[in-house]
Image (cartoon, rainbow, N blue to C red; front, side, top):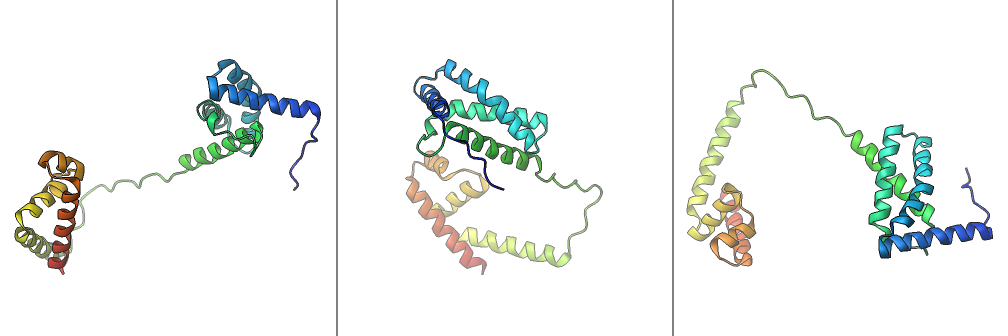
Length: 190
């Protein structure tokens, strides 16, 4: 199927230039009158395009509002040398529709299982206990400065920046000590 091409007439060229000027006024001056004119012209066309491409009326309405808000907020991204205003707007509309459809079709989280949980395998329990004891011993063998940082990062749920603020140590020192400590722990757990 061939894309429909419009014949460029002086009237079409003037209209295209007018829309480019409107986007420039929005970009440079947040001109509400220019936006209202663009909205009045393009919003119904965008909504019709979305409905014709399979969107239901409520999705088309939501998407159209989003597209027009994008036009207002991102007018600075329009480049007249790359596309016409209409092409830019309809490309935004197509992309928003795809985003909204993806969001709607996300799989639902699986139902929670009710009732008693299965007993864990005794071999798994024993292995976990042994690994826990080994990790505890490996943590105890770390130098105090490294162990303290590991505890703050992994048991205290602090970020490296928060640890730096709390201890007064440089961020690079914190990262280096944690990296060294993790290497020692990995080596001890083998």
